[in-house]
Image (tube, each protein chain N blue to C red):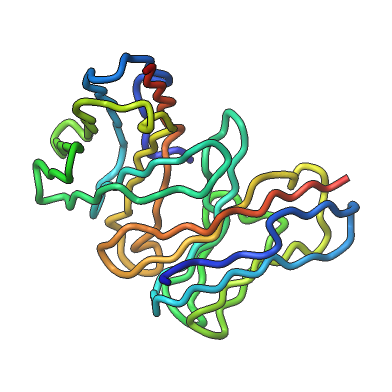
Length: 111
Length: 115
């Protein structure tokens, strides 16, 4: 089944403790992206990638890192999480001129 | 920055009625996409319309695009209770380089269809 898989689905962590949210797609898509969704602010793009080793900042990249060493994987790294990074995170992938396929989301709480 | 702005923010209708949602954007686009999201779940892609297209259909969905007005509309005909969800428009940048393909979402329209 064609899908985007992100893990974990739920995560509660403490301020400053590094964490990684994994994202993997099995559709050989070139583009991958991370979004965060917050009430009243909609979906905001954190980082996106056009292909292996090609990444660029979205609208809210501060406090996040990404890497694209393989086409299928696009992990999101929070080096030192803070409470304002509490959010619902989505990974998505697509190929040229097609819509994104989204993962099921990761609900992150930073206390 | 929010590229797409949906209107209305919320829409409540009866089953069988048509639902129309509008989206306005500010900069040049390569394509515009509509997505649906059920509460707290991942977004589902509905339809993509390219900048050189004016209208597109998919089942009960009809999307129009007016690049001169920088606006798009999504029409859901004969709505059903199962159509209750949030609907988002998203614009794909027309800029070159690494920004090509950047997809920016609007705030969404919450659609409620009453049985």
